[in-house]
Length: 95
Image (cartoon, rainbow, N blue to C red; front, top):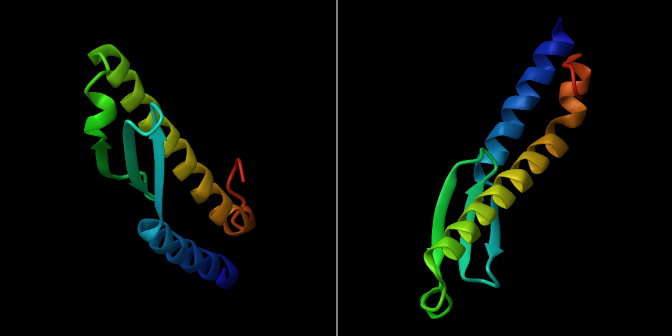
């Protein structure tokens, strides 16, 4: 029982670290940038006016979608990497 409490405390520490971790991705050769934290909360979406000016709306929407998807995927991977050892000790499925 003590071991599980210790692991739960460790998971809370990891969650705190993930909240501070920032991941940035680009799409459209830098036209769109997305910043997300390790808790998968979008911090900022930036558009480069020089590159967006010539882009059509459909292309811009796809770049934003791509950047957000990439950011979430990287955030999920970062969380999985950090929690793998702790969660495995708790007997959680998938870890």
